[in-house]
Image 1 (tube, rainbow, N blue to C red):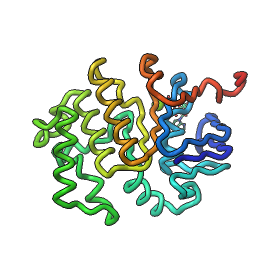
Image 2: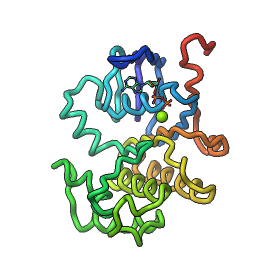
Image 3: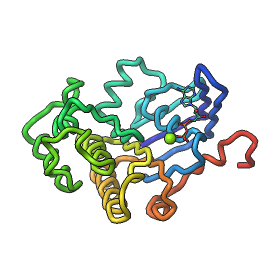
Length: 222
Ligand code: ADP
Ligand code: MG
């Protein structure tokens, strides 16, 4: 589950100001996030992931008040419990695709890289249609393929919270629905919560709820 309590956030520089009223999403909840470019959608995901911390208010993920933990605790919690699919994918070019997918297991002691994990990685890669790319490197893949690698990496630990920043943005219509379906199946399997930024109007009906950042912009009537 995810709980936001009266979040107030500013970057150290610039005059961007984000103020979000209470928002609560139960386990199993699938929320679509929409809004104009620059309205703070990526900032929200970074706050929820504990990459940024709010000036006021709190973020609670699966009983853990993440916003008041130390940097190290937030990082370990994030790697173990949160599946992050970044807008720029965040893949490491010097690692092959298999090692990119397994990377979370190499950077925290909280995740154990077992034979079972390696098997599940293979199955996920097959479901995503990138099984033949496991020994390639990110620069050799198309945008859409890199995006699917990022999704495999995010889903492999079976996270309780999935944060997707336009995860279907570079895909053709058929792959869009397939990937959304895979995200939804992971949510159901792990009784997780999904927060997905999207620009695809036609995907919105698949979500339980849609949060529109237009409502949070200063000077807009909510
Ligand atoms: P969106 O994802 O909705 O397009 P963002 O959350 O990326 O919007 O950005 C919201 C606003 O915050 C933008 O005006 C952007 O320029 C500003 N911003 C983003 N990152 C930083 C940063 N590190 N420092 C200062 N301002 C930033
Ligand atoms: Mg963004």
